Length: 227
Image: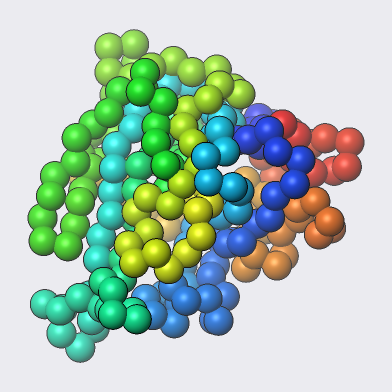
């Protein structure tokens, strides 16, 4: 596939703090017990405008969950006296029909209010969006909003990070499909860098690392993803 993504922000300096897998020393691995991330975390200042990485149809919602103890699934994990959880928080999903791929932008402080919002359902320890509806057929003029690449869709924040265990950042996902229940199977996710490793293997300004052969970024002069 031809590269089609540009960086979802305009800053020249940034850092990748989370790669395809979390590191063993990362708090989410130690407390949560899993190293799976299947996304890229771009560390940016709170309030930084977030841009559509390519043109498509956009919707938004909210999501978080509290982590439960493996020894007793009825009890929630606490870290330093606070409930510990994660999730996308305020997020935007864009469907790119030409590529038949989705991008997702999580932990937003707030979302561009012109993007349709799909109300989540609340259960004990879970705020769940209606993901079973988030299929390609939903992304049209009636149910979504057409956005252009580079258009502001939200602002960087820390929503969904329950317990304040991580800094504000942009959680960026690329995936192919959801199943009938709205879940994203493991083989649905794609790494736009084509690296599929922990954060230190990824390139960013001042941290030179090779991109994978099948990356999907439009590159700038320094061999990094362009704006």
